[in-house]
Amino acid sequence: MATPAPHDLSLAESVSLVACYAAVTGERLRQNKTCAGRPERTEAAAMLMELADDESIVIENIEFPRIQNRRRTSTARVGLNEPRNPLLLPLWQALHKQSKPRLTESLLDSMPTGKLHERLTAAGLLTQGGAFITRDLLTPEGIRVRAELSEEINSYLDLGKEAAPLGLSERSALTLALILYGELHGPWIAGHSPEAALEVMRRLKLAVTDLVYSSERADYRGQILLTLTSVNARDNWI
Image: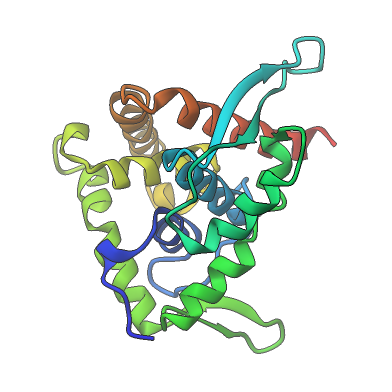
């Protein structure tokens, strides 16, 4: 399989590369002190956005106001259109067979992210390595493609330049939103002074406000993002 051009990657594939792997080493991020969120949940949220964009699922918001911290979540019911991404077709078919909508938070923990990694491996962007524990990591070609995908984001987060969120593409803005709500922003603020880290966070939030929440798809994308951050917070309640 030939290495795909960055613009040929699906949203989930590009989010996986940019949000879930280290820029220099290509190592997969892990939930730890640097990253409060789980990378596979962020990948799952990107896959849900693809399904919703294709109207393959319909996301509907629900609330549990009496539960501690007013947990926010949503449901996903099957839509009429087949997903354009063949990776998501089995999931769409499985939802078709269910009589009731699924909680979005349950999908975030059960999406076939392993299949996503297989696709990236087949494309020559991902491999496995490690001296004692085998882990996914980017190949040299994967690091190159990740760098191309990150150019616009790196420029936007460059504190030596004026913040211009309107210059971001929709794909870059969604990636930043998933990094922020997936709580994978640690590597993007690492090495900055406290003041500079606050400015990076401000820019992340600005991109979400100006581009993601102002789009015609803001309703269901916002619900997916809120459910993602709610599920990550749930880990801290247990």
